[in-house]
Length: 364
Image (cartoon, rainbow, N blue to C red; front, side, top):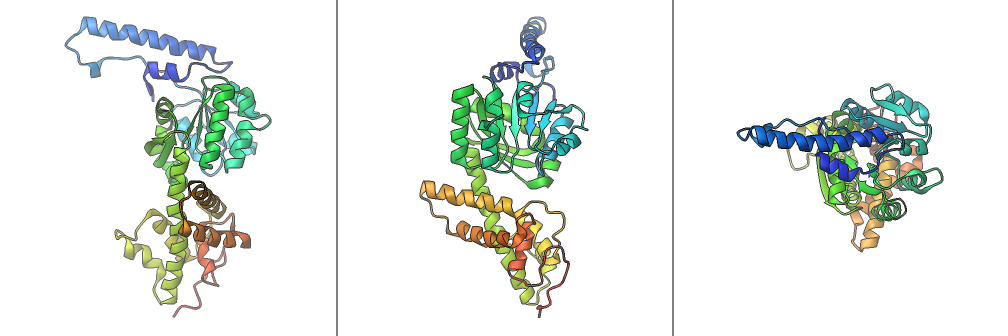
């Protein structure tokens, strides 16, 4: 991970370091100057040597702060630490942060202020827009300790309009830039470093974010200005949410028709109906395997509600998404908010009670 950015790029992107990181910034400036001299020496002494083979000095990495150690934040911070980044982490439940701090290069901050004062880049992975707003703009939040030149990378799935507003306020009041970088791929993708990350922000800021987030992702795409990443994630979740609702109907109909629903994923593999949500949800629905949720129904409902809100703002019809949200809202109202979306099968099959592995008694 050494040399993850060109020296000029990092120096421009991170002009101010933490109050305790003066030596860190000095080393960045020194590396810039030494690398410049090394380049000249290489050019003068060996015209025959190609530019690609020229030796360069290793580049110091920015110190990262990570707020939110949940289902996704835990594997993300571990991968960043294993990639060699120095991290300061914070979580409302300190025990979760302390578990991650067992990794090399990770320490726990006692407060948001302590974290912000000692890092260059601040990453957020929080539950929803309201929590992001509280952490960024609320009492004791990022705004109170932030300084010009820092960068916020928001990995949460948040409302696009609210994201633009928060980013604008943070920039105007503290001189801090913002890249919204919501992710897709779930816990498995975070653990494997194969997430799809969609970014919104200024090009230079997104390039800094790209170099930091590369250990987490198979693909990082710049979608536009601040908020564009969140709007793209909304589109992603519309597809996922509508698919989840349809998959529950499919499994229920297959069972009612006497089909062995446990073989649906196998039978449809590679066809037009195949997809990651189908491969994840159909087998769990058919087996009534609701243990160890990979994601939560309340989270998917939150994303669908954001999609509907965005459609209202943009006057763009979303009837299928609205229906999927209502189906999930009814399911959450019955106590399934913390359960896996595979429990949606119980909306159609009476035997499908979370925590059981029963077989549909109504099968033909």
